Every structure is written in C-alpha cells, then in structure tokens.
Amino acid sequence: MLDFPRWKITVIAFFTLLGITLAMPNFLSDEQLENMPAFLPTSQITLGLDLQGGAHLLMGVDTTGIMKTLIDDKAENIRDELRDENIRHRIRASSESLTITLVDEADRENALSIIGGTIIKAGASITNVGSDDIIIESGEGVVINITLSEAAVIEKKTQSVEQSIEIVRRRIDEMGTKEPTIQQNGADRILIQVPGIDDPKRLKDILGQTAQMNFHLTDTTQTFSDINSGKRPPTGTMRLPSYEKDLDGNPLEYYAIKTRRIVSGEDLVQASQTMDQDNQIAVSITFNTKGGKQFADATRANVGNPFAIVLDGEVISAPRINSAILGGSAIITGGFSTQEASDLALLLRAGALPAPLEVLEERTVGPNLGADSVAAGKVASLIGLAAVMVYIALSYGFFGIIANFSLSINILLIFGVLSMFGATLTLPGIAGIVLTVGMAVDANVLIFERIREELSAGKKVISAIDVGYSRALSTIIDANVTTLIAALILFQFGSGPIKGFAVTLAAGILTSVFTAVSLSRLIIVTWVRKKRPAALKL
Image 1 (cartoon, rainbow, N blue to C red):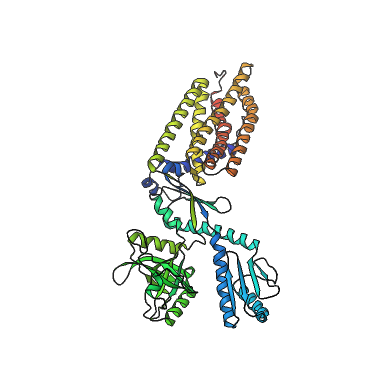
Image 2: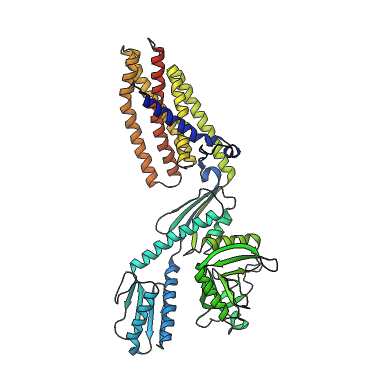
C-alpha cells in the first residue's frame, strides 16, 4: 500500500489539478471569466430553482381535441370527394369516429372506394375491416362507420405529448432563459422548471397559448345582424370573436368565417416584430414554398374579398384582398403592443402546440428567497466544515492536518465534477455536499484509527501505516459502494430536488474515496519516507 511508482503519482496529480481547474470558474466573476484564456474551462454550476428563484409548472396536455381535429379533417376530405362524385350523403362526426349515411344504397360500393382512397391520400393505411390506423365497418345498407383504432389513438396522443415538449422547449429557448428543465411526467404531463425567470406570468401566458394560426376566407353572405344574432351559422361557416377586447374583456366584434382554411400556420417559417406602412406595430410572417404558393393562389382567386387571420379561435385581423399577395410573405396588424407583437412572433417561430396545455401545479420561488437559501447553505456548510476540521486536527495532530487538506481538495473536486457535467445545484444538493464531507472524514477516521491500533500493538511506523491503509480499504470501499448504489436508485426513481441530492452525493462519494485513499496516502507516504520518524503520536 506504500508503493507509489511515478505513473501513480502522475495520475493522482493530474486528476487533482484537473478537478481544481474545473472548479475555479465557480469562484470567478463574469468579467474575470471573459478574460480567461480560451483553453481553460469556463463552465459553472447552474443554481437550481430553489436557489436562484424561478417558476415550476406541471402542465397537462389536453389530447381530447386532437382526435376530433383528425376526424374533422378526414370528414372534410371525404365530404368533398363524395360531393364531386354526386353521391348524396350525411356525415356525423364524434371525437373518434365518423358515421356516413348514404341517401342511395346503390352508391355504397362507389362510396367505399372513394372513402378508402381519400383516407389513404390523407396518410392512413387501410384494409376493409381494420388496420393499424383506421377501422371501416360497412356491412349492409347505407351506413358506413369509420373509427380510429386503439393503437392509432395511443400513438397520436404519445406523438402529441412529445411534440408539445419540443414546442415548449423552443418557446422557452426563444425567451432567452438558461438551463430550463423540461421533461415528460407520466403519460400526458410535462414538468417545466425555469430558474432565474423574472416574469412567471408571461411564461404561463406564452406556454398556455396553442398558437395555431390559420388563414380563412370570410363568409360575405352573412350580414352584421346574422353574425350578432346568436343564431347557429350555416354549414361550412363558423362564428369567431375578434382578438381585440373591450375594457370588460369582451370581444369588440364577431366574424363569420368559412370553416375551410386556405393556408395553414404550419407552413410558416419565420415571424418577427416589424412596423407597417402606417408606422404601427405589426408582425411580419414568411411562408415556405408550399404555403407561399397556396397563399398566392388563394389571394389571386379572391381579390376584393376579405379574409381572416385566425389565432387560437380568435380573429387577429380581417383585411380585404386588394391584389394577389405574392412572394410568400405578409404583414399582420391587429393593434398590438410591443410586447404582444414580440410574443406573437415568438409563438409563431416556435410553432403551434398540437394540443392545449393546462396548468396543474404552479410554484414560484422569488430570487430573494433563493438568495437566502444560498446564504443559509453557505453558512451551514462553513460551520460544519470548520467544526469537522478542528475536531480532526485536535484528534489526530499532523495526520489530521493532512486529512483537512485532502478534505478541502475533495470539496473542490466535487465542484469540478458538477461543473464538468453541467449539473444543477439545488438546496438538497448542498445537503448532499455536506453529507459527503462527513463521509470523507469517516474514511480518514477509519484509516487513522486502524493505524493507531497497529502502533499500539507495537509495530513500526511504516509497517503500521501500511497495514492500517490495507485493512481499512475494504471497509471504506464497502461503505461507499452501498451509499453509491443508494444514490443511483434515488437518481433513477427520484425527481427534481431528489435527483439534485443524488448527483452531489454520488460525485462526493467518488471524490472522497479518491482523496482519502489516494491523495492523503500519497502525502503521508511522502512525508514518512522523507522524515523517517522512529515514533508517531496519533
């Protein structure tokens, strides 16, 4: 145990210096970090939500409307195809099925062929009675039932949650926040933690908007009295409120909008805040090739007619088409404030959510409370560290001083490991660091007590040190491995603060074993070989 070839000394020195170098950025200011040489690490430990303040949201993905939208789209396609073939019919849609009733039973085979082809063109695979996506039940008579298979429903909901997580991530990144935690929680929930955010309400507003923008023609056959009478609009038309509200929060007006969209917001590729010709705040949008062509064709065919820009069921603007809009770009006006235009552009750039999000749980931690937690954690850590170091020094003399030096290096190594992996330090994480300090001391106590026993048995200094380290090593390894297993289990099955505690605990276990078994042993062996003491007071 006292044999240290040159390569071992080199390895111990390398990892010690590497850990200290990785830890140093945490003790430097932002200005000092900017002036650091490029080859040196500059990454710092990120403070968690409980230490720097921020927002914690648990949001549920409302997937009930997704199936209805999917069914409605299929119903619209089937209705057009049957109408083109002069097949008289009625369609009734529910959340996950379509019921098509034919007027003439003689049209059944032709209708089945058209329906099958329409669904295939819409992107679903099909067999007559069932498939992975669609189940068609035709039987005898004039009624045809189309339902989504259970596998298709599950897959669609899973895709919606995954897509929602990606959209949420884009929106938060667009806000310029650092190190957010965004992860799936259960089948249809998303856990969002955004440290350091100054305006939690704005975060909720941005995440809560579906931001589904579409462009529709208005129904010019409907008069002002028809729209505001409250009567049900005719088939193919819907009544939507305006985006602008009065002082009581009521829409300023309502619009009669044709159900079929002329261009989908999915074809938007860019959006930014701008100014229109009247020097009013507006949002500039740009379509991809497909959307630009559809927009140009639609505006060319409807010159003189108004069309509506609809966002999440509200009409932002309903301008009149004076000429064909070519080039794949347009400007949206709607009486926006600077913040509203900026947020709308952010939402459009990030993309629309496939389903609405509902806030199920909300916690906000103020920066002052976080600062108090950091200060309290520092005080507790320093008091505990000082008490331990004084006790060790008084109990074991010179060897205790060496143990204290190794303990200080151990703390720096913990910070270095956390910085290297970009870990987030939480309040329970600070508790994990304090716990590892105690564990590091425990390893040294085991070694020193074993050496003390060997000296009491009459062995020489070098022999006592050799045997002490050899016999204490297995106990140290066993204790730390069992604790490491517990930390891994906590990390695997825990969440949030529990994971933070597990990360710092695991890092501290690795560094404490390294400093107690390797670093402090190297220092002691070097001292013994140089001084060759005949006796040792321990």
